[in-house]
Length: 219
Ligand code: DX5
Ligand code: ZN
Image 1 (cartoon, rainbow, N blue to C red):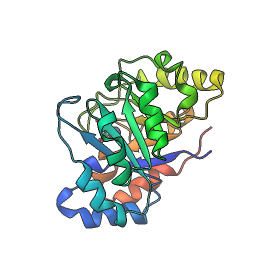
Image 2 (cartoon, protein in one colour):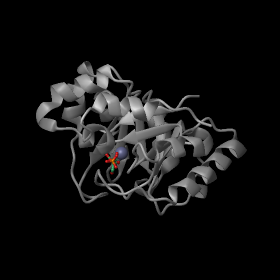
Image 3 (cartoon, rainbow, N blue to C red):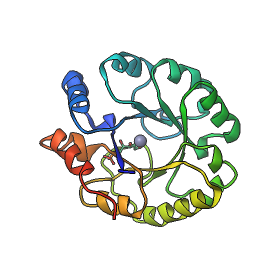
């Protein structure tokens, strides 16, 4: 499978939302990545349900929603209503992860689990078969524009092994510090979905940046 690209709206210029949506729609982006932060699970606040709801009719790509919030169970059906296609919850934020994953699937969404940089992949052993996607954070969540953590490569390899062993069909997604310098290496290592915020929206030509992040193939 050719890798997918999910630009992260967090790095967009919120005063020019219409033109930013045009970029997403006209580009080769596969999904739109939406970072929801509550100022509790992460030390930052981003945007929430009303923003997703108003964007939904205008964006032609699936919504890949990354919840960086405490106790995400409270909002699963609200995110479905706001237009989420895939809901990512943090391993570190869920006391009853199995229940949370079932609730996401019961709402008709794809279910993903996100791991912070310090959280080892083997902790997903008993749940991997249930997952549509695992998101490996390659920075500490909360902010865009941070430096990529190289240990992510080892985690991609651990996750590939875990997925192969379990027969799971989960996709491997990488988020944080992804740019044209490491994208190809990440895909070659096994990443199926790349998230890129500043590498897309801070580029002089975001559509061209997306093209570059899409157009190479795994070796
Ligand atoms: C960080 C978010 C990322 C962020 C990535 O907490 O999860 O999705 O937008 O931004 P860049 O690509 O700039 O590192
Ligand atoms: Zn994210």
